[in-house]
Length: 294
Image 1 (spheres, rainbow, N blue to C red):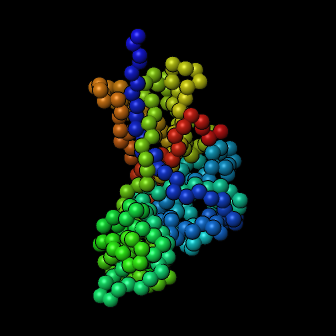
Image 2: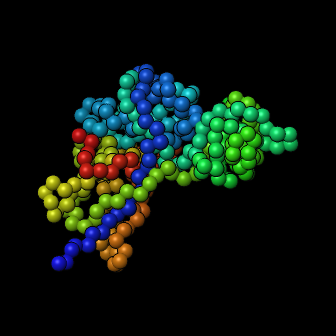
Image 3: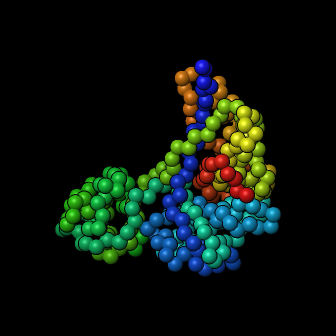
């Protein structure tokens, strides 16, 4: 018996770094408010917020935003992204999802110790920074004083690995901090590239934030890819074209290489008013699965 060999495309899917439910209406102010958000220690500017349930006009699948500022521990300032009819903020009592396309946050918290003499330190005796994956070269931001430092080493003050040696004298007892490094917080997500019949924007949302991949071997066999992007043009086909090209490239890849790395898509659309969003260039994959936005 000869079994069929499959080929796949590997997509870099952004991980959900935080989800919650809004506790105030942000429609008028283009904001997201959550009284339990803990945003200062978990979110950075250029994060993506996806409100999956608020439909505007004929739009289905919610609205997406870029975080322009972390204004407090409970509020994010937003910029609506995508083409078509955009949102104006996250309503009250709405579930939201946050993704980090530029940085990976290791830890945020509050310091609880004073640095030793002649050293620059961040001390949090409730944490083991080595176990959290903090590395030399990471950025440690003192949010209280708005100072950026670089992690130079990990030491012990009270409990194992509870202290970071940093590059600047800024952290006092009780300061709020966040530790992060450059690079998207993402993971690998495979979709099948064999027997693809067609790829299309679903049409449920004129922001074109979802692709449907239909396979010819089974009438009900489909995959859906939801994504954020910076183009303001309605009917943008860049992501569809990019994935379609990758399907062809995947099938042309010689055996035994069964996985083709999706190279990503640059935003070539001129009509964009989101130029400040990661240079206005990239599409970011947020959700991959067998069910779509409807």
